Amino acid sequence: MKVAVFSAKPYDQTFLAAANTQYGNELHFFESHLTSQTTALAAGFLAVCIFINDALDAEALATLAQQGTRLIALRSAGFNHVDVAAAERLGLTVVRVPAYSPHAIAEHTVALILTLNRKIHRAYARVREGNFALDGLLGFDLYGRTVGIVGTGKIGAIVAQIMHGFGCQILAYDRVPNPTCEAIAVEYVSLADLLVASDIVTLHAPLTPETHHLINADAIARLKPGAMLINTSRGALVDTQAIINGLKSGQIGYLGLDVYEQEADLFFEDLSNTVIQDDLFQRLLTFPNVIITGHQAFFTETALKNIAETTLANLTDFEQSRPCVNRVTLPNNPT
Ligand code: NAD
Image (cartoon, rainbow, N blue to C red; front, side, top):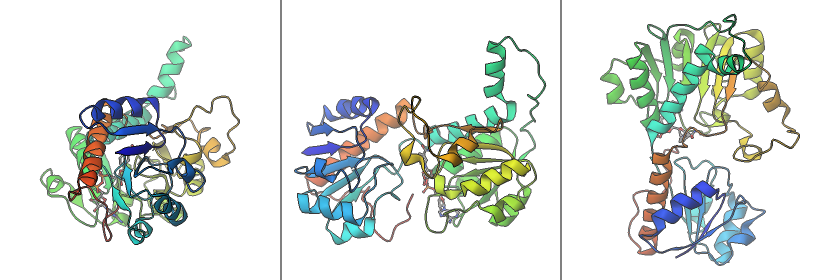
């Protein structure tokens, strides 16, 4: 099958080409994002394969359908960047990779927690400058602290297990309690109670209308003063301006982000020679107690191999008219 692969970085090409040796699809790689402005590139391709910062709204999908595309294959679990209802109306099939390595994201979450707490980012720079002073590097024992996990699906449950291993008390907020969490004495509470009681709050819920700006000024006001906030889920779960206000007042003591609401204009590109115009993002970078990574939580060999293999299997299911377990349909829980 002829497949147009968008937002294709060299590492995507390597892993997809390796997985494709078993399948023999004709993969055409495009570095650009697929949006309503770039749909012309997909003309003549039965399938398009996209990543998280491609954006398929109703207009883009209508053009794709008109040009002959029938399959939208997502290399991600999340599908908030595709108008699935419009795709259904247009007869387009949408498939995704629901799980490729929840461990990758959970482990990166814990990396952010440990780095922020023990100020490894600052210590690294200091020691290289010959500065061995410890002032400003004081951390706290994780043992005995309370971690609040918002969303205990595949990733949140692994974060719970790891933090349980540190001897933390775990609180969780989810619509559906996860038995693997209950088995390690995770206590399910309301979001308000979680925010009040947690030393560390970490977000692992999908982006939906319900979770959009879940962490806003009201939620920040409920936090323990100086609490740590981590978001490796989707940027729009937090209200960035409210977070900046929280950092300035000290209400938020530490912030770790792997995702950012306006990341589509920034992440995955080398912008080191350009003047970044996003003032909110630039303000975040000025705080010594903030660490931002550019949506790299998923970025492990295991995850890229699994993404490539599941994507190729999804393409084959479609080509051979087999039901695909990874098809995205409505109503569905968007993750
Ligand atoms: P999952 O579907 O296994 O778990 C999501 C959990 O959130 C479920 O338990 C669900 O019940 C819960 N949830 C849904 N709506 C909620 C709400 N309103 N309030 C509280 N809980 C709610 O998904 P997952 O695989 O654990 O992934 C979680 C999120 O991580 C994804 O949605 C995605 O946005 C993000 N993610 C980020 C990266 C990265 O590289 N940073 C990679 C993969 C996934």
